[in-house]
Image (cartoon, rainbow, N blue to C red):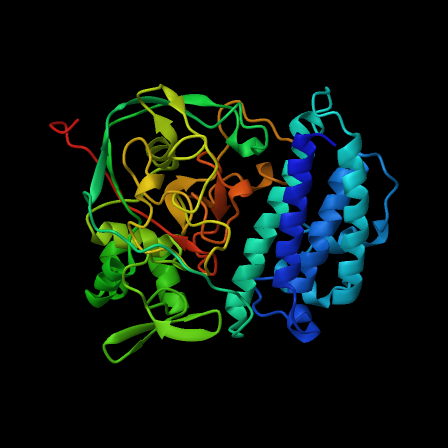
Length: 433
């Protein structure tokens, strides 16, 4: 096996170890549904193996199905999350045995494929990028489920660098075109393609994500009680949900507390706010006299290098993320303090755009000009429309293998259990432009 395939094999091992670590718990916790928003953890565990069997073994390897009778159980489009506990899904032991059997055959397919051949699933080992990213995304979903379980002691924490305060609050991005999306990243999804020219007017964007201290000021100023800051749909959600703060926050006297993986703690005011939905982010931005950036504005500020006239894979360049550039891969179970990664700044000087929190944008999830579904419609195409808002950047729970400046995430505007935050933007005045 050559070096390229050995790196892929190492990625497969790393993501599987992560999945098994998040499901190393009592069977009752794995089979229980902790929220109707989420699947039982054991469903996610078997689903990643079934997805791997479908795409690597059957589609790319031409191998006879191992367990075709369970395909329907793990079809995410046939069974909403709230209904999955009622399905005759595999138990924890059987799920681990099944995904282990699939994985052994997956490595045989990896050894046999020609990454330089004409098959689009084989080329650049795309099908392996597909399943590696898919499993990391489910690992992040597992972490969200573990947070909702409120069970302590299940999720490891870690150390993060201190924050920093130096720097302007906003960064100016001059008017002009840039290349949005990609045609060169081999593991990019169909919704990131094709690369296309976008010409934007000048704008300002926050250097850092909105922090807990700033968001607490919005709450204290009555932001949740003033319909002026909310869209009609957002105000309806606010009244129906009775939300008064980010999810998992409570106030005790003059102190805000949060529950993080089952343990209460004072809200760290120097961290990016997380567990807010799109409606909350949009309301805060209006209160602050700002707005959410469009995803084009977000991507230009994150990845465009105006001096070189090209897009970067990451804000700082094309080198892989390291501990001094971004908070990714669950190095700790929380966002890093604001200003912790000046070395991860973009060409424009915007910081912490990759890692820490997924950032809501103003944009609906829509196809790029010239979009073509690949390898299946249900990854992106069926979600296009007015029901989903785009998030960018990746959270602390996202793995570097599943994050880049062009990556597009999306969710309903009411979702808060995800590790979501935001930053603000504003249009430049004619004098500034």
